[in-house]
Image (cartoon, rainbow, N blue to C red):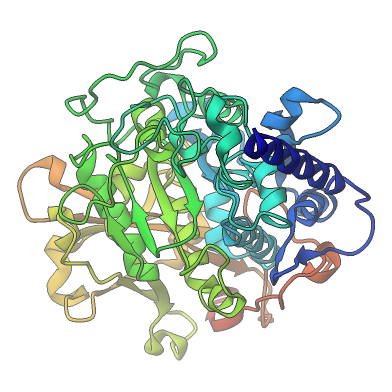
Amino acid sequence: QSQRQSQRQSQRQSQRHLQDAQGDSDGEYTSIVTRDCYFDFQSTLRWIQDDFVPAAIELSLQVQFDDIGDSWWKTKNQEQGYDIQVLTVTGKAAPSATINGTNNVQKAPLFLTTSVHAREYAPPELVRRWLQHLLERVQNRDPLYLSFLQHTQIHWIPYVNPDGRVLAETTQPWRRKNINYDWNMASAMCSNDAYGVDLNRNFPFQWGLDDGSSSSACSPFSRGDTPASEPEIQAVVNYAQSIFPQQQQQQGQPIQTTPLPTQDHRQAPKYDETTTVGVYVDLHSYGNIYIFPWGYVNERAPNHIALYTALHKLEDITSYRATGPGPEHYGEASGASDDFMYATQGAMSCTWEFGSSFHEQCQAFEDAIDKNFRALEYLANIAPQPYSLCQGPDIQSVRLSEEDQEAAANMDVTLTIQIQEPTETIPSSSSLQDVVEIRAFMEHPLVHTNALPVWSWDVVTTHVNNWNKDDRTFEITLSRNDVLFARGAGNHTLYIQAKGSTGSNSEESYYWGPVAAVPLSVNGNNIPSSSAAATSSLSTPTTKTAQQLFQSNAASATFHTMAILLLGSFVLTVWNW
């Protein structure tokens, strides 16, 4: 009885801390006390509302910050607890925009969740920094960002577990779970940071297995009393069902009335690689690994080859280890987010664990920022066809040859395209592919129904002169007449894709890779300008600086003119960011 009274007193203290955290939101941004590189809970939400949203609107992005549900504590007291909120951001695609050739379809989602586990400080800050970086890159007309914002919509729930997060930032730094102390009578016997439900064992897919979750109130892996019993998970699941296309969802019934059954999905047919859209990432710390389905059992998912290939390409970017089914299986997790999103929504899903501690040191966090940004960029770029694009060749760079930089005024332009070195550890035969075709578009091929190649090069028949297998480069010549015929004088974007094959005669062995974007400006003036801005379907460039649009931003990235080629009375300028 004494223990129960002590526990109830601790719970009341926790509730007071939750109330205190809802206090005055005026003033400067504040950080977690023990880690000054991470915005705290209130500052992150205020930054989204007061800084990110207005800056994104100024850049003509489409942005919303919405309430999609309540935390457990708020369901008990509407005057306390917290909302579950989601931020969405994308560009303005042209009226003819489509996904995978289908009209009037929503953009492909890149769905990110953070702070499912309260004590993991770094994940919300990583996504916040990336979105800050996104504004800077859009402001500076970065073709990669302008490109993927045409076909991908970013969805971010910064705090899936807001009740627990506030306590983890203040009085309970090791709290993992939410604060539901009602689900199990034994909760009163737990220590002050051990009661609650592990939200990453509460998703309604393969819920309730003893290998990978626990019925114990005080276990770190407490699964709750029913699938999706927790309001936080209900909010996440319902939101996921609203953003992934209904036609690819395996089971889309509302979870409040029809919990998803615990049935064997190991023999289910794989999702169609050409029509399935969307990526889901649940960011955690720590471990520097990528975990992908299946997690509830050490067996391969139907789309194992594509999942394995995508995560190993992320491994190439960050050096974090991909751990899926097989000898490196991370261990069983029943009712986990990534299994649910893959099995029921069709999303290419993973759990991304980064860092070396729950409270990652600031210097280590800062040192890994750039490579983590590149991983997020890659996922945003493949979201329209994740199971297909990840298996095609990745274009590492597009540049002008030295000869063309000194070419005569009447010469066409030769670009050198470098293909990313393949990873031999990827078990997909297409990862060791030769490049068999390269094509270029003046309209985005993943977005526009009328996008037809302006140029297409059959590498198989021309590789003797053009394809260098040693440094994986391919030279292509752009006719200035084709540019002018396709779009005329002005600012344009050239989209390039490479197609790879193992050399098999089977059509299924061929995959187009992610789209690379290059800005082109054809100027009709006789006097060449030293620089010009490429346009896209997002907006015209604003005259404000990134610092004016956005507080606490890093130094704006700059771009450099690579070459200015006189084409008769025209000027063709190609940049590399």
